[in-house]
Image: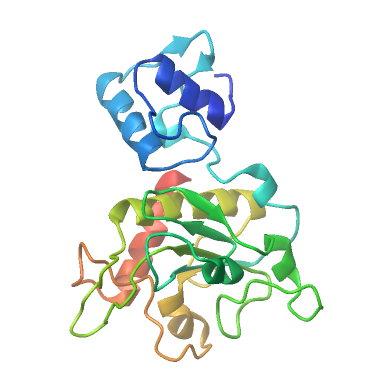
Length: 234
């Protein structure tokens, strides 16, 4: 099997008749690429080779996070969040997270490099995503859940979309492969489980561990299910 660029993969989808009319081969994973990939998988269960290269099945995709978003450095943890905002990333959101997933599945790069969080005591700034747990910790967030209420549960005007959750799992899988971070509850977790998993008080945080499509799950079960989803991409 010959590896190819993600843009090459998207181009092969289009060449095979699975269109990407809005964004084309832009090098980013989003709902449009996801839908085209699923359509391809449904219609072609065997491996097909095109002149442009091997078409990678969706479950064999390598990185959806651009390489230059993942600088070489040592990182220990990945903490996932929601922004408590709309389905698009605001400038304030970009201040606090390294990678954001918008409502259409597109990735947005935060203001600060992942490398900025290697040290949070210098003058260069860093992504302040988790109280007391930012050093060597990568912050990833889905853009959603403005006005959400934990109990009685309401997801507000901008509920988290299941495709965002799945794309976030794929992003986290990329980061795990890049930085060698263990996939367990003390190294990969939702913000809402930081206090339980690490003993660092977070003042009532519950993101992103309440799922609008399955609100009966406990925070801990949703957190564990997310790691299972990440493992699927690994």
